[in-house]
Length: 71
Ligand SMILES: [Zn+2]
Ligand SMILES: [Zn+2]
Image (tube, rainbow, N blue to C red; front, side, top):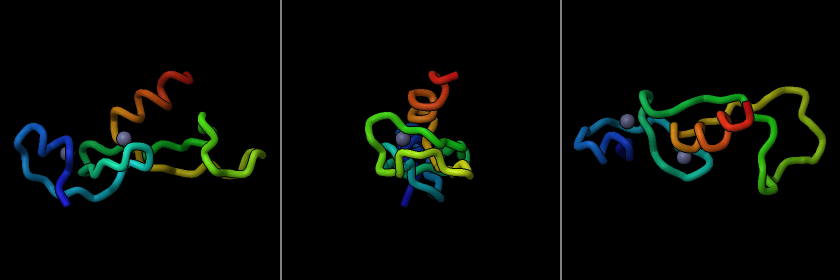
Protein backbone atom coordinates (compact mmCIF):
# COMPACT_ATOMS: atom_id res chain seq x y z
CA UNK A 1 0.00 0.00 0.00
CA UNK A 2 1.19 3.51 -0.76
CA UNK A 3 1.04 6.63 1.36
CA UNK A 4 -2.05 8.60 0.35
CA UNK A 5 -0.51 11.99 1.06
CA UNK A 6 2.66 11.22 -0.87
CA UNK A 7 0.68 9.75 -3.75
CA UNK A 8 -1.27 12.98 -4.06
CA UNK A 9 1.96 14.85 -4.64
CA UNK A 10 3.28 12.26 -7.07
CA UNK A 11 5.70 10.60 -4.66
CA UNK A 12 5.69 6.82 -4.38
CA UNK A 13 6.38 5.89 -0.78
CA UNK A 14 5.28 2.86 1.17
CA UNK A 15 2.68 3.31 3.88
CA UNK A 16 3.51 1.85 7.27
CA UNK A 17 0.36 2.75 9.18
CA UNK A 18 -3.31 3.58 8.83
CA UNK A 19 -4.96 6.61 10.37
CA UNK A 20 -7.56 5.27 12.77
CA UNK A 21 -9.90 8.18 12.11
CA UNK A 22 -10.14 8.48 8.34
CA UNK A 23 -8.57 5.17 7.33
CA UNK A 24 -5.93 6.79 5.17
CA UNK A 25 -2.66 4.93 4.66
CA UNK A 26 0.33 7.03 5.63
CA UNK A 27 4.11 6.74 5.54
CA UNK A 28 6.39 7.54 8.47
CA UNK A 29 6.63 11.17 7.39
CA UNK A 30 2.90 11.70 7.40
CA UNK A 31 1.74 9.83 10.47
CA UNK A 32 1.51 11.19 13.97
CA UNK A 33 1.43 8.95 17.03
CA UNK A 34 -0.60 10.77 19.61
CA UNK A 35 -1.61 9.75 23.10
CA UNK A 36 -5.33 10.24 23.08
CA UNK A 37 -7.61 9.26 25.92
CA UNK A 38 -10.79 11.07 25.04
CA UNK A 39 -12.72 11.04 21.83
CA UNK A 40 -15.70 13.05 20.81
CA UNK A 41 -18.56 11.36 19.07
CA UNK A 42 -18.85 8.18 21.11
CA UNK A 43 -15.71 6.30 20.33
CA UNK A 44 -16.42 2.81 21.64
CA UNK A 45 -14.45 2.84 24.85
CA UNK A 46 -15.63 2.45 28.44
CA UNK A 47 -16.85 5.76 29.86
CA UNK A 48 -14.29 5.85 32.64
CA UNK A 49 -10.81 7.06 31.90
CA UNK A 50 -8.26 4.38 31.23
CA UNK A 51 -5.20 4.38 33.46
CA UNK A 52 -2.88 4.43 30.55
CA UNK A 53 -3.21 6.63 27.52
CA UNK A 54 -3.34 4.73 24.30
CA UNK A 55 -0.99 5.72 21.55
CA UNK A 56 -2.88 5.98 18.30
CA UNK A 57 -1.84 6.63 14.77
CA UNK A 58 -3.37 9.63 13.09
CA UNK A 59 -2.68 11.39 9.85
CA UNK A 60 -1.66 15.02 10.14
CA UNK A 61 -5.05 16.29 9.08
CA UNK A 62 -6.94 14.29 11.68
CA UNK A 63 -4.35 15.17 14.31
CA UNK A 64 -4.82 18.89 13.81
CA UNK A 65 -8.59 18.49 13.70
CA UNK A 66 -8.93 16.32 16.79
CA UNK A 67 -5.95 16.82 19.06
CA UNK A 68 -4.59 20.30 18.49
CA UNK A 69 -7.89 22.08 18.98
CA UNK A 70 -8.23 20.70 22.51
CA UNK A 71 -5.12 22.47 23.69
ZN1 LIG B 1 3.76 10.12 2.93
ZN1 LIG C 1 -6.79 10.73 9.18
